[in-house]
Image (tube, rainbow, N blue to C red; front, side, top):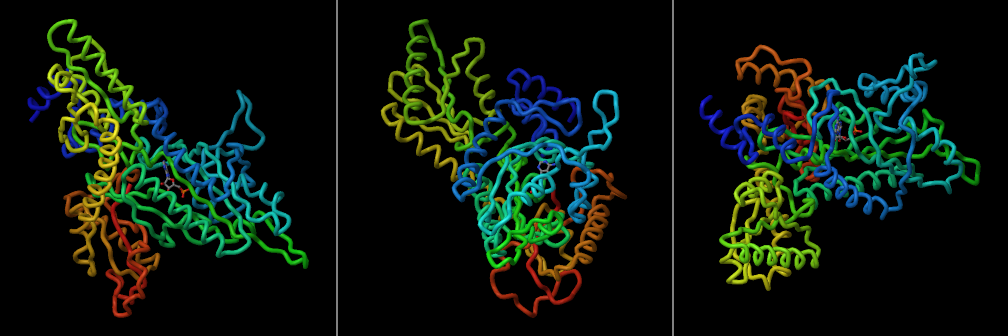
Length: 518
Ligand code: AMP
């Protein structure tokens, strides 16, 4: 095995390929793919990473997509400070309890101690709502709808993973206040739809919408809605984004009140919601393969790479190069993101590997034969299919092909995800389904204590199956199952009264989706 690996790594180094496959070691594969593709560079503070242009461009596309939708429903962008006083941070007790262990504090300026340590925002409820108190006086000040694009810091004790779980991350956080609960509910669901659309339409990653259980909801919220993704290679679910109904909890603590003409006062109903750079990691894990990234065309910084294949003499080289540039301009004029790789120092084969690693959706090869027959060879990154396309048809066929790739990628990911959802009605079948890399749908009594039981028992039995005694306290990925959500789709119908909870045997209240998760 060792010698195969050694041989492989020398061979692959010559074209900067990957030395790990996904099945060999998914963690190493991920690290290699994000660094070698030029997305991420490591940094000397654990849990913090450099987003290089190749991933930041993707983040900008996500921003454009979400920002325009968020604004379309009357939310305005703003910016609040990164720091929060400890007094304000501690105002909402449940919220504080949820975040306290992860809050980073500034205690010094230069060499002198600050009089009061100040916290770096883990999220901005406690920073924004004192201002909401000043701005919401009359019912006419409602609704108030604000969003900010910023960074937050959560000093996670679980092992960090680039994009997926980082100590500093980029996100947008929206915060709204409404006159009625119904209006706030609508806001919560509207945003969840936008989030699901960003994953499905842009990143080609299928989502399951649902509601978090009491145990998993946001600290200080009445309820949390979520979209959940799935990583087939590891059989793990992942919380992709969340939208919270905060009810009047924060309003009470921060003294927010809107007055009506008759003198009556109303504590507004609030929502908050966030979408982070985790999304990029999910997209990479869902679509990537042993050659590297596979980027959905709508998000790919570069959609087509043209590789000229020089043949004999200088004249031919020039002709091919001219043709490549002509094709490039043609595609640019119909809005395709395209580039010619005319670097002389690398062979075409080297370039193929290079751009495959970077996940560019289409490669064009133009050689002497193609030149003669006025066509280009088009190679799909997602499935390797090669076709010859006449130059005269490129400007119509290529934009259509990019869209086809986009929808094929979503369909494939959805099919794979769906084949990893199992319905289980008895505890006996649970851990084996889990260990086969599935998410599991069960009838559940929806009680926190029983959720704890499942967590503990599934960890114990999974470890026993693997012949392990225990797992590290800060493991990035636990063997235990937890609830991902109560999916909306499965809980729409009136509940069958005869259904029993798979763990407690009590009458079931929900269909609940469980899984190992990130
Ligand atoms: P929250 O404010 O806790 O509801 O978090 C909002 C969203 O941020 C979650 O749904 C996750 O998708 C994402 N998220 C949470 N923690 C991290 C992290 N450490 N790094 C990146 N994304 C995160």
